[in-house]
Picture 1 (cartoon, helix red, strand yellow):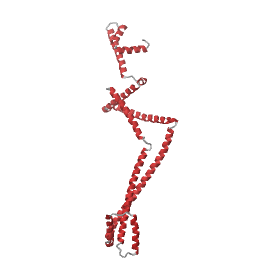
Picture 2: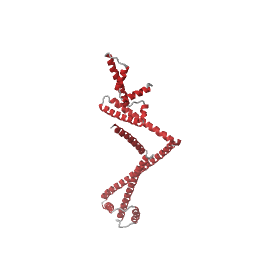
Picture 3: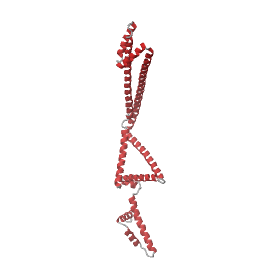
Picture 4: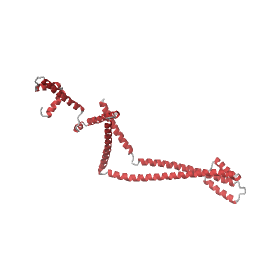
Length: 316
């Protein structure tokens, strides 16, 4: 079961480092990735505003066309056809040619305003005031659209300027990192890696110490700390599996080795205490008797360890 848990832990570590690398790759997929996205958003907004501006201009031309139709309709009411009226009609024809042709509904609205201005001035002025409000609203919408579009264009230019400045800075940095056959970039990467790892280790140590203190009086913290200890043991076991001599070099002793030598020492003390008891009862205890009893209590593995110790002490 423990081997499966260790295998799972190793796979989890690999997955963690792998996801970390992919995250870093995603964050730095393009030096100007963020700027490009901002530029795309602003460009899209400018496109929408330009479309709105075209629609408003089209409405204005349609309104001009309808008003031109209304002028023609009003001038046609003058049966005298004086020279000024004829001149106004000629000019109005040119205006109509530049404007959009209004729909029938809009033409009827303008004709109603003209009829009221001629026959019922007060009512005609009310209708004309309502039309003025529509024109003012249309002009205001156009003004707001142009203003917002200009702001977005200015924003796009600022992003372009910032991108250019960043490009110069990044180009200089890349030139510096490419020095010494690329070794500068290796040194920079290692420095960044170890600095980040140091921050991570400090954070984990602080959390570990905090859990250790809290575990003394909080059962929940004690449970979490126990889990942390188990995970830490997995890390040590993983290191030991990958580099067995590293544990010995670091001065650590495995639990199995400790228990084996503790068992030998326990047996020795037990036999010595037994012989002391026998000696106190009046029976002589010789060295041969002591060695014989010790040998009886030892198994083959214990004997091999004792022989190894004797060899280290140059007694074998």
